[in-house]
Image 1 (cartoon, rainbow, N blue to C red):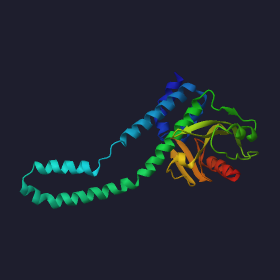
Image 2: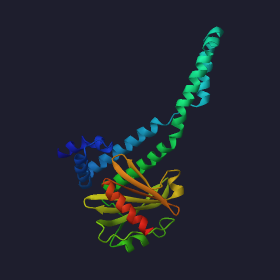
Image 3: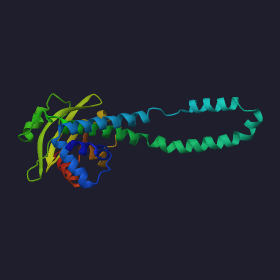
Image 4: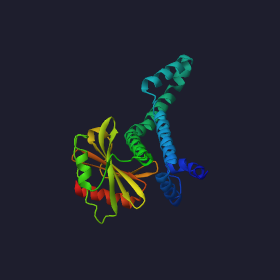
Length: 249
């Protein structure tokens, strides 16, 4: 089957390891093949589950103390006197090694949130009904969200920009509702997520260019809202769309 050729490349695509031309071709295939898009979403969710499982257990000081106590109970007192300075030095080195890991925990939290947004974007690509409100113009989409989300936002003027607003729907992050707007540029679909800052938690969203799996991401905060622009379009396209949205802000 033709799709078998594409599914063999899915893992490399989701990990951002495919050559640019192959990634572009596979992205176009996913937009037209519901089966492959669903398989892509399944693998994204599996990768997220494995990533979360790998971070589930972190030894705490009490655990280390129990191990040291057990070792000490099995060694003669003279061994303790000889090796205590060595163990103390090793403990200091261990703490020094763990310190930067502690500092880096928040970025990993950011990456997990971005992975969730990537899941939402892939689910939209795989859906036969990607939007709940179809856009005739920006004045159709914005009023539709009234009463469905606890905030309002402005939409950009897209005339002569190369971008088309396809529509929007309500998406949920941390069980809180927000807006997902679907834009098209050439053959690429881009999701723009808007959530309240308290919903996004501690993510660093101040004019940040990042990546989530095989997608480019742009994010920023403004007036209590966090904006996330995500898609497989070029970084230049995401930058341009982000500027249009900021100008409308």
